[in-house]
Each structure stands twice: as C-alpha cells, then as structure tokens.
Length: 230
Length: 104
Image (cartoon, rainbow over all chains, first blue to last red; front, side, top):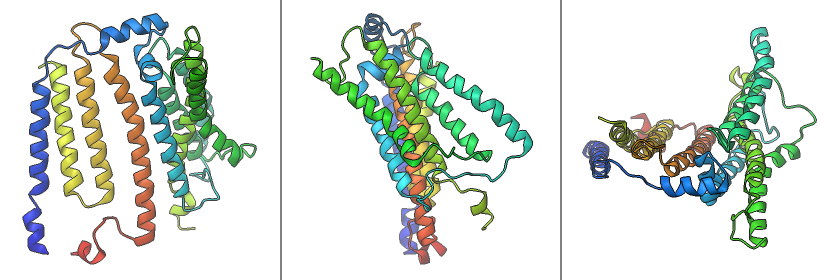
C-alpha cells in the first residue's frame, strides 16, 4: 500500500504540468487580435434597444444559458436545503445578539444595500449592472441581517420564502413559453416588448437569486449556539 | 506583454494548479478550493481572450459566459460544502480515504 502511494506521488504534478503545457500552447496559438462576436452582438443589441451588450447576451441572445443557469442554482438550493441538519429551520439566526455598533451599522447598511440592489437592476439594460450583481448585493444583505441577530420576520413563512425562491425561474420559463405561444420560438420575445419583459424577468430573478444565495449560505452555516455546544 | 496574453497565461497556471489540487490533496475542503481555482482559471482565460478586439469594447459573449459560470460555481461550491458537512457529521472523516489509512 505504501509502495503504491510512493509510486503514484508524482502523478498529480505530472498531470498538472501536462495540462499547463497544453492550455498554454492553446492560448498562445490563438490570433492576437480577434473581433469575436463583438460586431454582430453590437448590431443586434442596438436594434433591440439594449445598450448594455452583456445584458443583451445574457437575457436575449443566449437566454437559454441564463435560464438553465438559474435552474442549476435552484437545484443546488433545493439540494442544500434538503441536506440541512435541522430541517425545521429554513433560515437560522447566526448570532443571538449584535453589538450596538453592528446593530446600528446594520440599520444604516440594509436600506442602503436595498436601494443599491434596485438601482443595479434598473440600470442593467444600459450600464454595468443587472440581475446577478443586484442579487449578490441582496444575498449579502440577508447574510448581514442574520449575522447581526435579526431573524426572518414572522409574517414571512416557509411558503413565502419558497415562493420567492421559485418565482424567478417560473416567470422566466413562463415568459419563454408565452413567447412561443405568441408565434415566435422559445425565448424569442416579440418585438417591442423586449425591454419590458427583460426588466420583469431581471427584477424577479434578482429576488430569487438573492434569496437563494442567502439560503445557500445560511442553511449550512453554524450559528452561535451550535459553536458554543449549547 | 499585453493583458490579452498575460491573463490567459495566468488563467492556464491557475487551471493547472487546480488540477494538481484536485488530484493531490486529500482533504475534501481542499478539493473544493482546488475546483474553484480551476474555474477561476477558465474565467481568467475567457476574460483575457474577450479583450482581443483592438481598441473596441471587449467581446460581450465571453463576459456573459463568465458571469453565468460564476453563478454555477457558487452553486457547485455551496452544494459541495453542504455535502461535506453532512458527510463529516455522519462519519467524522474529512477525506474519502478509509479511516485506518487516513491515520497513517
């Protein structure tokens, strides 16, 4: 057993060096200057009236990628929620109490972060921003709230939380299918409704992704009481 | 050396480091970190190659792919960590080796 281990010891280094050689060679063999899809995307984005080209690619030209990506994120969330040690709690408080400074900071930061998040969705069609960036801010806000001892409000029940998690993906699928019913292909938004539909999808996606990022963290993190062994 | 060459080369190095980590490290958390290195390497290659449009804005398609990839990486990492946590609380092990071998 020990001999076998000693024999196999250099294998990872060799595989890694071979990988490095192949990828380096591949990268260096590419042309130094390439337009890629810049031209066609810029043209199509201008026609669609969406000046942020990355947003246009994400939600329109390669909508499939984004749709499936949200599905992956939702699947992971469902899996992580099912793996919880204590399935009664959808969200656990990470801390029993916050110090006065942290509590005051949280009260200032949370509304600010919420405004930033809405702003990021709104400007997403023309400037850097969009659902994912906004959702990252929203998810971090949820984690901050939990770290500073704020619990999920009583009126937000399990069903409400799960609906928030699901609404983004369901709306996205719904609009994709409706576009097909309206005469186009799947995900082919009818002309003239593009910007509105994308804003609707982005807003709801932000809520869902934010909730899912927060729950991915909170459902597997250990709180105060667990760490103290109480 | 321009960033369109430097970033992909750094990305290749990160990728190789990730491959080494996945194979050589036994601790499961180390493997998750290695997988993240691997992913970041791919992102760095894509970001670097997106900038090859001489003078113009970068090619938006690789950028969108990276943005998608980051979210998938987050999902992968969270799921892996949750599985490792359950595995640890069920077996007390942090590697996939049988217990008597891990102690040696």
